Length: 294
Image 1 (cartoon, rainbow, N blue to C red):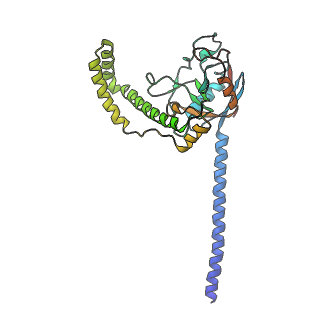
Image 2: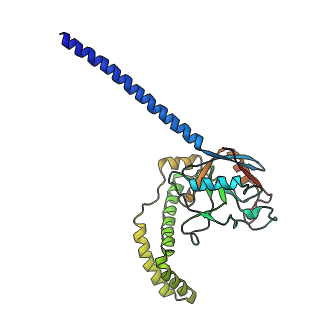
């Protein structure tokens, strides 16, 4: 009887100790998680874009370190100061960062300037073009199949909201665009240089039947590569964001998103309403100055 009682007491005490130990472990785990979360916040880099219409505070993503570090470098060098938001499209985005826009005469065509280098793309499936994100501008796929980013030009998304049907249609468009990107990437490879030159020659001489044969051969190769990929699909969370907050979902997977607005998102709406010329340049110059504040 005493032995049974001893066993029961021992089990009870062991249970209490075990629960206490588990609770301490849980507390320590939660503390570590909190510390990790705080460290992430401490490591975030924040920049301030001062504009004619007010200030925009932006958090740069650690998931895109090349773009983050380059943007900070340029800001510290005062590269952006006195540049213009040279391309503004309401319900789409506001774009700046072209060094040629500094002291540019009214009506001058802008958008081709940069610091003399590009940045390799840093695509992240979790970073989408929701309203308020900052992303890197770039040249088109025809001349830039790797989709590398401009060294300095960027845009901030205003966008609009979308319906389920519009998002379904966009999924098909993005999938088709990815197929075209694979084609451009294949044709730009060194081993296909002779084929590319032959196709260019056939096009110049107007030998379209032979050109079509070459294209068909390349399309077969492209189909093989494309079939290794999956059709593009928005997640339920992404669809909800685009239906409520809005953005420019058709740019997902094609341009590097590297930060988001945390204060002053209303300034984007104000700038986007500015009247523009035929090249989408605001009639009234909208200057910027960018500083790193954290």
